[in-house]
Amino acid sequence: MAFLNRFILSRLSQPNQRRWKAFVGQRRARIGLWIFFIALFFSLTAELWSNHKPLYLSREVPISEGSEQTVRRRFFPAVFDYTAAELGVFDTFSVDYEAIVAEDRERGKETTAIFPINRWDPFVQAPETLQAPSSTYWLGTDNLGRDVTARLLYGVRVSMTFGIMFWLCTFLIGIVVGSVQGYIGGRTDFVTERVKELFEIIPFLSVVILINGLMRSQSVMVTLMVVVIFSWVSISSQMRAAFLSLRRRDFCEAARAMGSSHGRIIFKHILPNALTPILTLTPFMISSGIAFLAVLDYLGFGLNPPTPSLGELLQQGRNYIQNAPWLLLAPTAALAVMLISINLVGESLRQAFDPKKA
Image 1 (cartoon, helix red, strand yellow):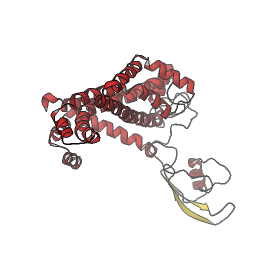
Image 2 (cartoon, helix red, strand yellow; image 1 turned 120 degrees about the horizontal axis):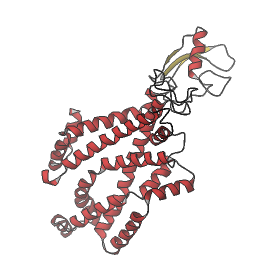
Image 3 (cartoon, one colour; image 1 turned 90 degrees about the horizontal axis):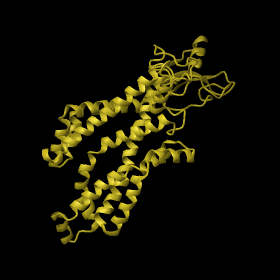
C-alpha cells in the first residue's frame, strides 16, 4: 500500500497531492476502500472459491476413443472449459468431475483433483431445497436447491460490474453533453436543457420496467443502457455549470488571446479543473448503479434468470421469510456492507475535495 501511495502521489499536482493525503488520512476512507477491494477481488475470482469444477485435475486419458494407450494430462477446469472427449470421457457429452474422480479412484488410478473450498456453483441444483446453513451449504440453499453462498458471491460480481459500468457510461455521456452545453452555449445550450428537463419529468422506474417488458430481453447490457439513459442528466448539469464558470476566467481568456484552439482550451485548461469536483461523485454513482440493479431484480424486471443477483435473493427471501430467513439475511447484509463501504469512500472524497479545507 505504501508503494501504491507513493506512485499515486508522484503523478499528482501539488493541490491534488494535498487532497489525496487528506483522503487517505481518513480512517473511514481506508475502511471503505479495504472492504470494497476485498469484495471486488473475491467476486472477480469467484470461480476459484466457489465452483463444482476442480481447480486442478491430473488424470490418465486415452490417446483416442477405444485406445488402451493412455497419457497423463493436466487440466484446470475452473478456469478453462474442456469437452468430454478432451477429458477422456467418450460415453457422454456432459462432464461430472466428482463422478470422474470417484470412478478413477475406485479403479485404482492415480487421479489428483483440487476443488475450491466451496464445491458449488450458482447454477447447480441440489435435491435439498430451502436447506438451512450447514457445513455442506454454508448459507443454505434456495427454493431450487442452489447454494446461496455461490449465488451471493457471483451476484456481488454482477452488481459491482454493473455499478462500475453504470458510472463509466453515465459520466461519459454527462461530461460530453455538459461540456458542449457550457462551452458553446446559445441555442445548443437552450435546446439541450429542454431535452434534459424532459428526461427529468419522466417517471424513471416505470419507463425502465416498461422498456424491459417490451424488449423481452433482460440482459445486463440492455438493463444498463435503459438505466443510463435516465441517469446522466445530473452529471451533465454539474459539468455545464463548471464550464460556464470557467470559460470566462482569466486563464481561458489568456489562452484565446495567444491563439489557442478550442480543443486545447477545453482539454488543457477547462476540463481538468471542471472534472475535479465531478470525480467526488464517483462512489455515489457506483452505489446508485448497484442499488438500481438490486431494485429491478427484486421487482422481477432486472436480469434474466438464472443469472445470480442480490435482488433475486432478496425476492426469494421475502417469499420464504417464514421458512428460510437466511435467504433474506445473507443478501441484505452483503448489499448493506457494499453500499456503506462505497458511501464511506464517497464522503471521504467529498471532505478531502472541500474547497474550504484545501
